[in-house]
Structures are given as structure tokens and as C-alpha cells.
Image 1 (cartoon, rainbow, N blue to C red):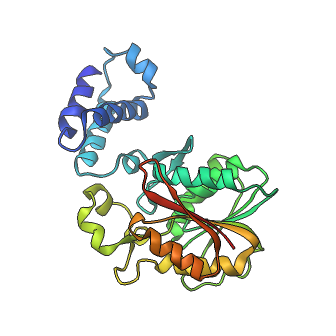
Image 2 (cartoon, one colour; image 1 turned 30 degrees about the vertical axis):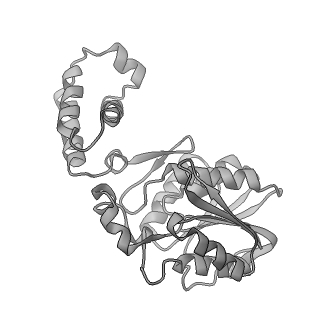
Length: 279
């Protein structure tokens, strides 16, 4: 096994830091050999089978082309859960975990009705359904493939989420009940920001879920604000992940749309990454 770990590190050392390589090697071996870390430490001299080595070679070949580890392994960690992901969904980020925690800490009504817009893998909706047992969760996305993945994640955790397909830029969502909260991590990266992004994002993650036009970077926030004004109960809450580059503009947009208590919330990197507001 030590030889295999060395192989993984050598093949990927130009793409990842030493610390990342150690974690990647452990996760690859855990998946292929069904060996959690404590067993890896106890069985360093174990010889891998030809089948296991072939599977590891195939994984390393994909990683060497900058494909994200989460897509290669087929899962991502999020809020203590193991969620299925693939190229039809974004890979959930730690910042979005912070958004989930913000919703849970701020939402105090009993049996809340919550809508997750642009759900993707369903990470936000599933986390809220698991942690807010009495909540009624709705989640929507434009991608049928993403919704199929989200339903897989709901089934894994026996969570209750009502998924439906919609194009929020055009659909009115009139069949939903009055809501206590809307949460969303919509597309917010301007097209001009592509040059600063890594290959593992640009070449593999769905651009439809990432990018907005340079001439209208608040496209989705404007529409979400309109929908929130129509579907939220009086006093209902809006929680958004945002592009820090447009933080002030997003705050102004929400205030112009009639929201009060509009506050920016900084993430773990001290960036203005979230907004909470009340209608």
C-alpha cells in the first residue's frame, strides 16, 4: 500500500499541495479498498490486488486531467452528510454549509415552509430537511439531471423534500403555498471572472449553474427578490449566497424591492458572502 500512496503522490504532485495529496490518497484507498483511515494505518504493508490497482490507476488518470476528486469518487461531504454529485451539479462548498447554518440559526418559526431555489445536488434542501425535522421543504432547479441527483440524496437520508423543475427566470411558482423562507445559492460569477478560475471548475462544473452575464450580474437576485415578494409570508425571510464583488449592489437591489433588515454576513474567509433579509 505504501508503494501505491507514493504513486498517487508522484502522479498528482503538480496539481495539489502535500497536504491535499495525503488526503486524496487516503480517500482513494478508502473507496477502492473499503479501508477507512484507521485500517490504512494498521495495514500499510497490505498488497493491493490487480483489480484494485487498476481502479486506482483509472482514478489517478482522471485526477491528472484536473477533474475534481468529488466527481471522480461520485460524492462530496456536506454538513456531515455524504451526497452524490456529478457533472450536472455543482460541488457543494464550505461557504454553502455556512448558508445552511445561517438559515437554521435565524429561522425560529414552527413547521416552517422553505423554498430552495437552484437546488443543484439538493445539498441545501437535504441538509435543512435533516436538521429541521418539522420543516416543509420545496426545492427547484432548471436541470432534470440535477434534480435526479438531488432525489438520490433525499432518498439516502430518508428526508422529505418536494422537488420540482422550473425556470425561475420565467416561471411564477404560483402553485407553492405561502412560504416562511426562501434560500438560494444561484449562479453569480460574472463571465469576465472566468480567467481567474481553476481548470477543475471551468472544465468540469456546469457553467449554467455558475455564470451570469457581465452586463447583468444580478439577474438571478432580481428575479428571486420578485418571487420572494410574491411567495413569502409577511415577515418571511430571504437567505442568499452572493458574489462578494457585488455585495453592496445586491443589498441595494433588495432594499429597492421592499425588503427590510437587509444585512451582509461574512464567511469564514471574512468575505461578504451571504445576505439575510425580511419582507
